[in-house]
Length: 407
Image (cartoon, rainbow, N blue to C red; front, top):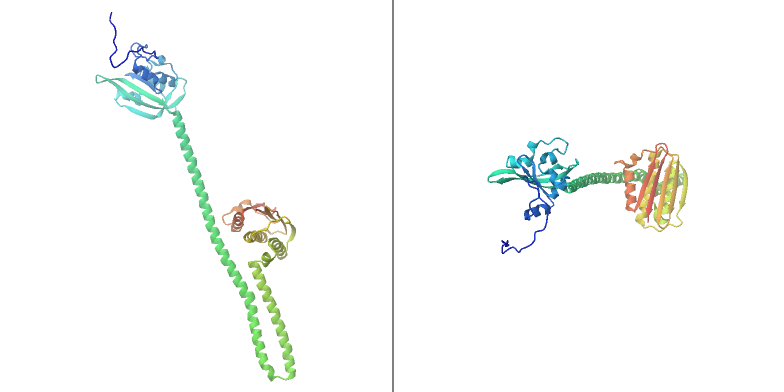
């Protein structure tokens, strides 16, 4: 009796049963060697085709990915079974198939941009490679490996979509920043223009109001000096008349001086009301509101409740006062109103100032326009103070400006 002896470098062991690999001639499982174990253990699909494109073998992973039993694919044309249609639904001619070109033209390939089709008609993105099988210098067929890359393709699509969204957001933010920068530059230029206009107005008023008064006073003083020099050469009757004339001239000079003082006080008040420094913000707001309606000849509905108000630092008080001035200025310049309602409330934690008129109103877009510098300035001041300015308006129904400051 003969016995089989294992080679010295391989210990004797019992082979483990494995699932079969199907071969073209017999069509039945005959191999349980290491090659078959390798084919069955891999997660990639692997199949072989002959010169007619028919399946000669396929591993379990490949059959499962295609939705077939392995023995059902043996002898079947693999292009017709799994590679027959493009992604757009167009027919995929066999003579253009890169898999078949591996043995027909001895051209190995690796493709990751096509689909394989399952038995149930569904498709999946696939990456496959095809290499010719050569025996004794002759091509006998090809071996094809493939893997489902649907998840990878979905991830790539998601990344592309996220990248596109990110690019869109960056573009939008860049555009918004560009617009904001342009508005900031326009606002800066407008601020400089307003400052220069204000300086020009002050200079003109000082020249027109004070200059003319001081010139008149200078002429009167010169006249007095001349007449006093002539006083000694006149008779008592003429001296009496001269004294009367001098008294009248002095009285006129006194009135001109009073007028000059009033004008100086008015100009100083326009620049910075002294009441703001001496009596505080609330008294300044009260004074400004009543001065405005008196000069604009409007009726006023007034409400102020600041009993629980907290003390404000000087920069905050000045900022709130300037915003309030601009609110009233807009009513006077644009509203064409006959009535204005002003409500001011303040607590230890917040301040609210509402100015509502019964004027012509405007579209909401007018207050967000790029050239609405007054509104932009008020909102910038409000933001700097940690607050907000809301404006609501409708044509024919008036406008409401609401300033809120959180302390």
